[in-house]
Image 1 (cartoon, rainbow, N blue to C red):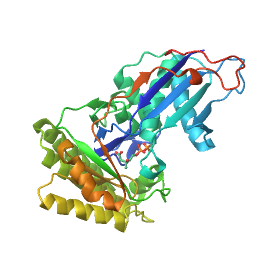
Image 2: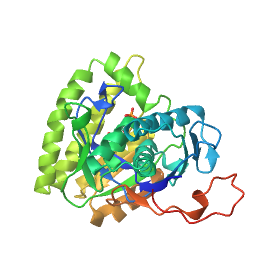
Image 3: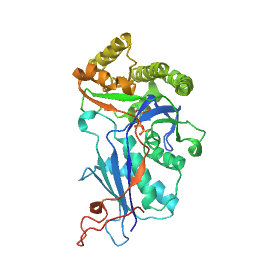
Image 4: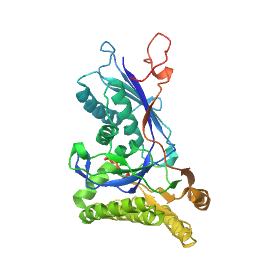
Length: 342
Ligand code: DP6
């Protein structure tokens, strides 16, 4: 029996990924840039089943409870890719603990698939470098490719499967203030909304072509350590993405009056000389990008909108020791033994 545990953190894109040019391989229409957070990690243990160990299908638990069919199918899909690479058909138990509070309204797929990719590669005995792990995580969820990397990460659109992965980028010290405005389910999943934007939004082509330019400018701002320019581009990228989404048929409105009120307060703070810029993913919650020195002030000034969490730049996805409790099948009659990595 082979077992491995890995931990990964969520990331928030400064230059957004929105649209695929290959749905199966999850190749993005354009490159993107993100900051991996130092809060809310996901820790995932993958344990190969013994051939004698029924059931002969993957089992996925999330925060201690069996996951639904759809989530389990997405996990199995990633494991199928790993099994192909490893030349085995062995099924696995996957136990995942996500520390993202429901109230944070953050997508869990980036950290989730990054942790799964690293743990699955370990459990199935694959020796993959960071680029290969990022490519693997990408097959689970595009944004997960960036959670392999600590701090700032660029996900290059690439030419094909082999060249589309995330890499580390040097840049200025940044912090984020995550504001929880709404804890409800998204009206439309980001995967579906992405598809609809590409199929029906007249602004999709403009979004894709302008993003390539925005990314180049954002990478230049990183090289120059220019927080103000990077922040401006971050806000522009988010608003352009939402503009393209709004123009879908039927339209999708992720941002609410509460979201716009935060963007207005961010603008007010900027007029007072605070370096702070807004962004938002496929939902109403707004994230403020700022510097570590200003994070506390930004949090204080915005927290009347909703619970605020300050994050700095977080670490790369990595394997961690398996807890004894995760190393033994739940139904096993023998006491747990300490597990190692793969
Ligand atoms: C708005 O990575 O969740 O957060 O590849 O279909 O799983 P799939 O999409 P996903 O999309 C994230 C979109 C975004 C912007 C971003 O993170 O770049």
